[in-house]
Length: 123
Length: 476
Image (cartoon, rainbow over the protein chains, first blue to last red):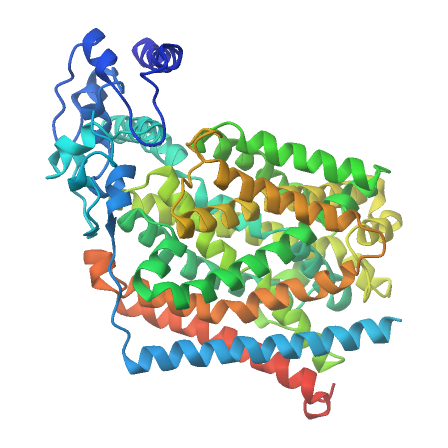
């Protein structure tokens, strides 16, 4: 457990260090890990379960460790550039979606009528 | 270090596929190494905890509990969030106007419907790692996407208003001024979101949500007739009498208290933000089932707590929030009434957090800006601004003198039910799409259950419409 706490503490201090240095900021677009790579030994990360799990040690400053824990399509940068393409909607699907749209609009009109009646009755 | 704007190969849009492949094994891994974000790091930290718990769970006797503790969250939150102020008002109206009878098993049925629907969002989120709004825009295009978003944002905003009405009324029972009650609620919403960490936000909100159980001691203080409760559960009797229109309205409001569009959007986005993967689907199902079970018990408790009003012939037709607690005070005592009022306050505050987060997730997904509670404020300010802005606007409306709040309260659950069939159609089309779901596509019985829920909601909506337009046809 101590190892885990150390790891998390390292993560925080690394962020603070990066923030102070200005050019090495971790931001929403990319993490510059050059400094971390210099100061921390590389982690040997297998594809499935990280060895760190067994040793209760994790160095998330190493992006390979981060990537080993996430699925390919789970990484923010990967999600940004991959999209599920447009589905070809059949006539039946379009009819269903239009039918439900008409249903919602018609029912909303009815709701407005009922609310108007309720408020008028209350006053 | 290659930034996306410096490396043309990273700009090209590619087609996504459902995958269980580790990111380091991905063909894009060398490029991704330079693009890891805070959000990824935080999510990886959560995944590491899950991987460690899963590994220990295989060897230790109670190791599985740690794994469940880590993976429980979105399902419990969505159901306890949906036990919100207008929902508790609907349950209270059921109990006070019709006593123990039809509505108790009916509430159980609505939560079963809720579980069927929400389980699909768990699978969608865990497999695609995309939010519901993003998937609708990707697969159906902007035209249908904006329709879905319109329904969501409109319904969410109206519901958010009623949550602050609940906060105001709940604390009003204790003599707290409206501005202080609403302002305090906003502070709690902000405190929850400024942690910059999904995990912390989830645990704070869960710890608030569990106070939905305050309705249980309130119900016990009302001394329910357990024999009648058992009889009602088995026979669905007695069936409510009186105006068919009023019964239809209450049935619709009770369904709307359990199955609403914001739940679909919220749970899927929360599953994604939590970093759940296909191997976590069973835990996600357990989470959803646990949430549905807790919410059912608390909802029935709200019904039972207000049954004494029915037995004493007190007309609760126009009761709003705190009026229930005030009317209950001479019947179940000050403690019971205070618990009821606190429960309404809690229901409002948890739902305000969950619903404003649901709007912000959807907005971020559609605008393709950062939309994760793992992001610091400065990196995802449009996401947090949407969240906070919608909460502020709803809170402000509640404080406007003579604003027709009864208009909002009357319609919010009904509108939720009416907007649900199109949302369910998108959901069913997505979970039956092999390009999106891969091997996790809906099975036959899941489709039967999903279509049945959709048809039931449409029939309930049409019944309400007929009862409104042609009241004499239904003897109203």
